Length: 200
Image (cartoon, rainbow, N blue to C red; front, side):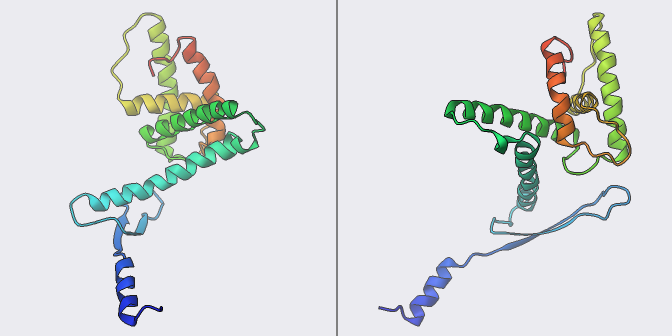
């Protein structure tokens, strides 16, 4: 039997979902760039303090997820693998994931997201960080005491060092892509295994 009009209205009411509009405005855009403006529709609650920020944070994570898959599929050529052994495939997935997460974590700590060229001040910080990492490594080898470094300082030094090892020229407008970082990462990890830069 067909439901009555009243039954159909009740069914539609049960499926109704309230959407909240969250407006995100960037207050300190990069010089020469228009401020970011996001209009986000969400079915998550936005009534208590901090809930709007949580919605914005969730949305920002989407870009990190996209970059993660772009790194694994494009830069690491995961889809080109011809492995047909499940255990070998699982090992490959594990190590690819670890590498992609490591680079993503470094970028987050250094506040240099993937996909856009670093700002001029970020480029200078990476170059200075790589140079400082070398200087402190020489001090460590001579038995000198290393200064206390914040997580961000360590990340900038490590990212700058990996970028330099990968052939990044640090010219204005040069993107710091994952291809460059993935070229430098094995050299950096080899140095760490040899005892250098392990403090980073």
